Amino acid sequence: MFLMHDGGAAGNQGNPAEELDGDLWIQALTYFRDLPDMGNSERYIEEALAFIGDKHVLSPLLVLEILANKENLRFKVLKQFL
Amino acid sequence: MLKDFIKFIIEEFGETCPRELEKLTQINLYHRLLECYLYQNQTNETKAKKEEKEKQLLYGGSKSTPLSSQVEKDSKEAKIKEEINTFIERYDSKIDKHYVLFLFQIYEHQEGVKNCCEKLQLKQELLNFYIKQNLPSKVLEVCKNKNAHN
Image (cartoon, rainbow over all chains, first blue to last red; front, side):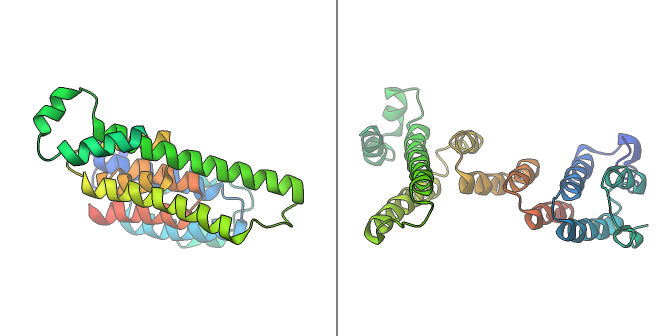
């Protein structure tokens, strides 16, 4: 798995605490992605991405992989993060 | 009755003769008493839910419960919840918090699960709890706090 790209944790080589951070965010992003309410879902995804991008918690590729499963996700949600 | 008995033993002998109390039984009385409270709480909640369901089926939600009976029911539920909270505060040093979390989960006492996870800094458990409760803003908060603490 390729969790973080900051602090040498990419490729699962970081300490367990850092990996847990990544795991939490993966779980949260997946949950936001699957929220039924489109407007709310996007709002939370946007907020999460702003934080993930700022702190470099997850690799962008992994984020895209998670969000790729969401149909009708608007580009404006990802734009800032990318 | 069991609840009252355990409560009496703990209050009377818990502080004055803890060794004797320990010798008396290998079963942790504090945990058992909490279990009694939780069982009572769960029974109340299940009963309330069942009554609500029956009412919906019979009257389609048009007939409301008499105010006095509702107030009595609410105060009973509030009292047992208060007893649980008081117990946790009062016997904090006497209980195994991880076991208490387990009890809260078994008896589906949501408030207790949340407080326990926060106290024990169990972020993963807390996240699962909020996801189950469908509280996205709280999910976000847990993740953000986790990073802020590191």
